[in-house]
Amino acid sequence: MNSVIQAHETELGALSVNPDGTLIASASQRGTVIKIFSADGGETLQTLRRGSGNAIIQDIVFHPNLHIIACTSNKTSIHIFEIKEAI
Image (cartoon, rainbow, N blue to C red; front, side):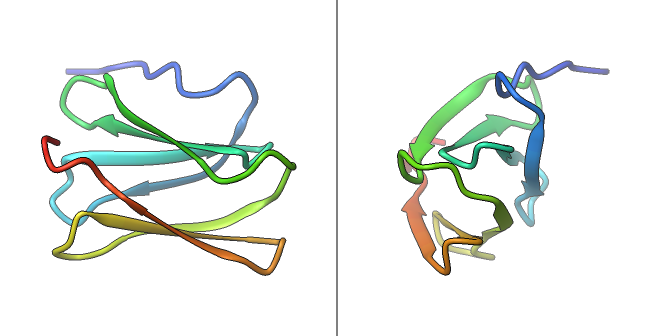
């Protein structure tokens, strides 16, 4: 089954899949928002705000067994977000 995910208004800046292959996280080139999608159906499960200023997201990483993700950017910062337990 193929799915098209309408992720962001601009091109993708970063993309990651969790270790189980059930979640996809993406950031746009603006780097202000990270979205988490269901890998199965492509629906948006959570939207996370990294900041209001543009940044280049260099990496998005899912923790292997906790419900958190982290992202790094060219702003020399690391952001850690909790993924909703219901996911």
